[in-house]
Length: 261
Image (tube, rainbow, N blue to C red):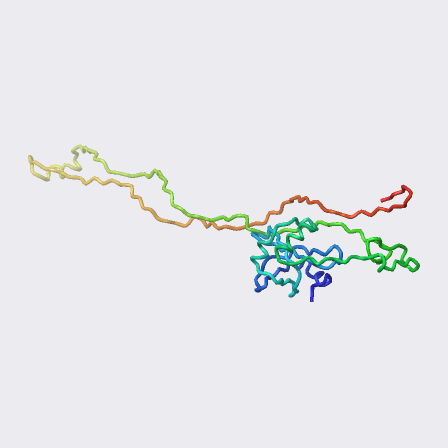
């Protein structure tokens, strides 16, 4: 059973995917394209390529809905290689013909409406009738495109911590002490005369004093001084996007050069 428009209403904005014949994911659901005459779904655009920046068109013939996804009767590679056509919200007959030729399909020719087959009954509640087709109601629907702007998270870069060793010269001043020889002379007095004459009267002698001094001693040790880690913070800024949108205008033709919008 072909997919009808009402079935697609729940898929809009559901972030569903287009699934290939073998169950593989082809890409995210883009837009649904309706037939200009029947209003029935004919094509679905699928976001393919890196970060979903490319769009391919897939026929909805033989497609079926599975939850929030649409499974089509075509392989992933076939869809990715489909002709690139404009995605401005409408397919021209030439673009549609290229897609039908690529997928090996035949465009269904619409029979349209003939005046003899249409009952334009103006005697009921309907004030006017459609000159382009069968009478529907007494109003014409005016539509316009609206921008739905969102965001998508993607990788913007990477940061790394790397530790390496550098050598630097450190100079410090440290006080050091040393002993020096000092000659002391002591006069002979009554108090020390005994020690002075305790030895032989005339002799040869040598006295020795050991001198000491301090030398700088350097030792190195590794001590932890700080811990460094990577973190992230979210910064929000305003970015302006611009896109052309189309809208329909309705004018009335009063038949006497009085045309109002």
